Amino acid sequence: MSGLLDGRPRVGYSYSGKGATGLLFDSLRNLTVNDVKSIPVMVRDKTSVYDAIVTLFVEDVGTLFVVDEEGYLQGVVSRKDLLKAAIGTPDLSRVPVAVIMTRMPNVFTADPEDNILAAAKKIVDYQVDALPVVREVSPGKLKVIGKITKTTLVRQLAEASN
Ligand code: ADP
Image (cartoon, rainbow, N blue to C red; front, side, top):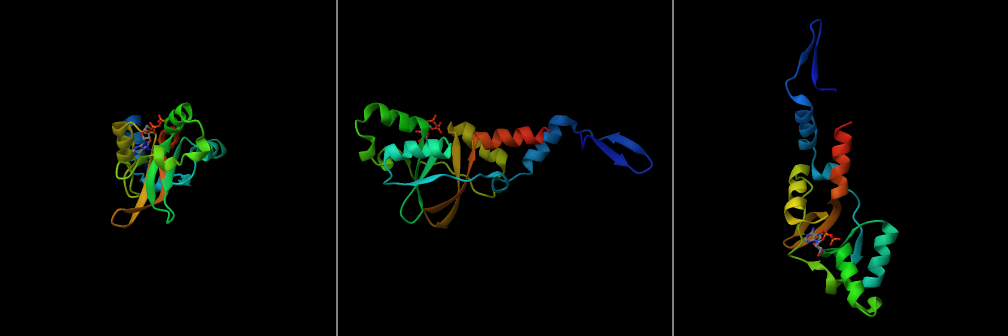
């Protein structure tokens, strides 16, 4: 309940007027993407679909970010992208993820300085599970420095309501 009641020396307590929802919103509004980002799992563009599926399980993630040999963002591969490829492809070890990924410039990203509510809105509006957090090294060249996922956002909600 901290924040609901403002303490005043020798006066006691007065109602801050914000309400629990307002306080929850305040605590989320003050967080940036950089504060809450988690570690991204990346694969090379030439990684096979088979190895990408194994990586998904080993790393226990739902989205893989695809990078080129210099580590620049090339695309995104989701669970369903891999599932779809697995249904229709005879030899998954011969198909690179570059063939099935959603590729740049169609990848939605988040900046480290973005507010997390802006990132949440992007995830909802674009109907994706995850955004790579990127830093632009030079025009069109993005390094992935983190990720924001639905899980990240739910975790923040749960923590903010404690
Ligand atoms: P799933 O496909 O497992 O439901 P998503 O909803 O995240 O997971 O992905 C839906 C589609 O959007 C997939 O084709 C995926 O490649 C693409 N996608 C996922 N994340 C992004 C992103 N950040 N920017 C653009 N496209 C994305």
